[in-house]
Image 1 (cartoon, rainbow, N blue to C red):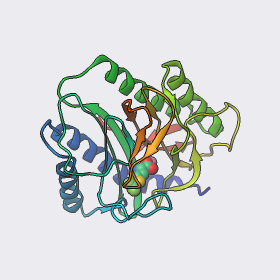
Image 2: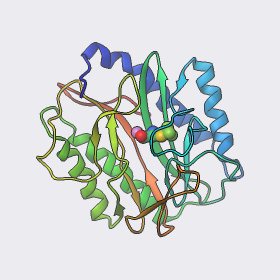
Image 3: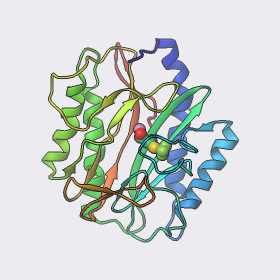
Image 4: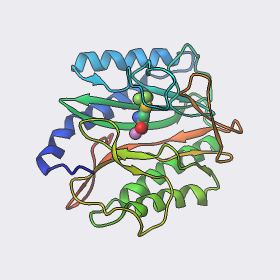
Length: 254
Ligand code: MF3
Ligand code: CO
């Protein structure tokens, strides 16, 4: 797993700031009655304006049935991850996750957030808040000299205590010149186990929980991950650099 120098971590800041800015803008822009394609188009405009480059568009890992068609993942309600932007119209009370990664000046940052549109419900808010708390716990555990299992255990503990379905597929990952690098960052694990976190390691930490059970199914599109029981899901993600002085959240939104 490649380590970045302090100078390289500085070079990653514009990507982190841009990804944070796009998510903040999308959150303000998203309204009931819009389609998820409208959100994707809004993000495309921001990318073009900034001279940035989408790392989703055309991305074709082994698990995708076709090259990825958008610049965002937009996952609504029971869609947990990798929801394709479409002509689906957003409805009152929808739980919307937006995941966005982008290349700025040759470095990638990756971040996601979940929020409810229109009328909020306590159950959905609890799910979203728990995912955010798990992300915060994972970040707090990402100290130099700690181990990956400390991050994973911190995430899993928060989800389990809340009684949610935790599936350890599709966790976090290293980030750098490309979106997906070593190491894998599992969303549950044993404290004190796994590789040591050294200054210079940059990882995306990304808990996703389902309100019901831990099973998921993959849609016919080959991308969209849905909860098997139809329960809503939430996802939160930041790109975090481990530095000598502790974790630095490159995609922090203000
Ligand atoms: N950003 C997602 C992740 O957090 C991956 C998106 S896959 C893509 O790892 F195909 F949409 F790019
Ligand atoms: Co990611």
